[in-house]
Image 1 (cartoon, rainbow, N blue to C red):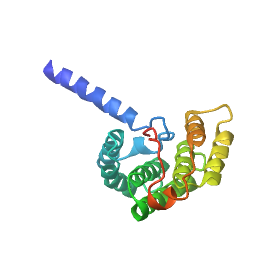
Image 2 (image 1 turned 135 degrees about the vertical axis):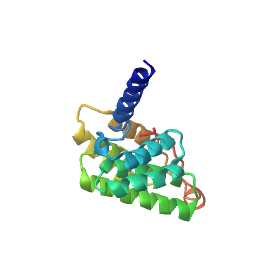
Image 3 (image 1 turned 90 degrees about the vertical axis):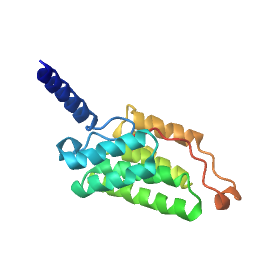
Length: 187
């Protein structure tokens, strides 16, 4: 009897874990190819998502890099790498911030090269452009979301709110401190 209950419990946990691996709103994308990942890289991906939910962005990056090694064409992993580098960057000053923002930009662009219709990437890329004080580029990403979801979607709504809340930095602030960042929802 115990072994039957244990087996049923284990099957439930595996099913629940697999459903979480298929993505989950807020910019994560469509689920990507993660449901087909081998268990070793799935563990890294699941660990990274858990760390991101706990706002431990820097700690999530090595796990995402291991998952990317296994699946170099996965736009969702690249989206999360862009997101984590962006979130690390908002806590840093000048050169370090710029380095993380450039890494974030590179991952978002790579994700869009694989999946140009990835709404989560367009949202997060628009938010990155706002944090880089590139309002025109942020509006371009908003236009992309208008095309991708003409009836509205969560990603479009989130970027719209970020655009509405954007305050350009003053001349003094742009050289001495990180741009003001509103916490983005976790993917």
